[in-house]
Image (cartoon, rainbow, N blue to C red):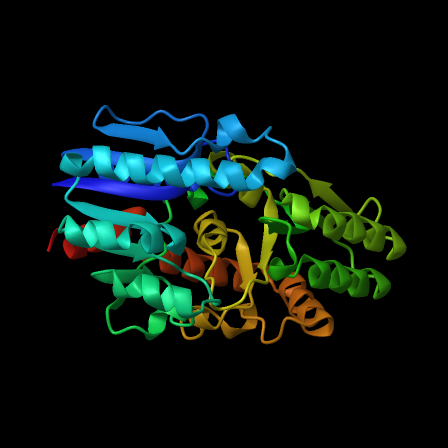
Length: 353
């Protein structure tokens, strides 16, 4: 079988999307030929049966704001050029996250008798998501709270964590009472609520240290500056440090250097970082209802509110070593059920059928 993959970015050094490089590698193990169309490409090293085609964002980023429409037309032109010229090099299409590509290419793929599969895992969606789903043979997501979980054609999938890379055996001696927040810095991640919760811990005289790792999109630069200002107002200087985002393959060492990882994304997202942290043996607290019944309830934050988060952090910091070890072992076992092999075994079974 030959597969066309469409994704936002192919760059193993990207702090947010670098993980998808490993996904492409896994796909290449099961398919004769892989063609990847991405909006932007950077550094990659993929098997010989993988061909990467970029729509050109890395070349056109310098174009002035006044020419943004022209730039988008260039992306669309390249998209149709590639899906047509490569039509004999793929039997099926796997679109990762971006429904826009299904909306653009859906009719042509229907005429070419190409099966379309879309991976979309997010709590938000609209009628355009519904239209995109109509062109798909199957839709994949990991969270039962995702917008796309409502379709009859939707298949719930494992999250897909590389447990050969993210594993507790590489765990270093974590800094005691150290707290980590890692991911894109954006309002949807509730980083501001996390900072406020740390302020409560500081006011109560609780000893801890914290790091926030992540980059921000241009539209959220002001949000990041406000976070740093608020941290100073809460007298968190020397306790909380803001760190730049790092490539996905470098994050295991960061997880392993911290006792506690906090994730405050909505249940509709089911962030992969939750499972990466668990697999590395980092005690993981998350505000995600998908975890209920899977891990200890003391690690599942009920409300994404300052006082609530502070309460859960205080409980986690006060646990005995025996309790921590028991919880960590349970989380590692749970994370293993969402490894890459589990994911790609199920993806291949559905796509190849």
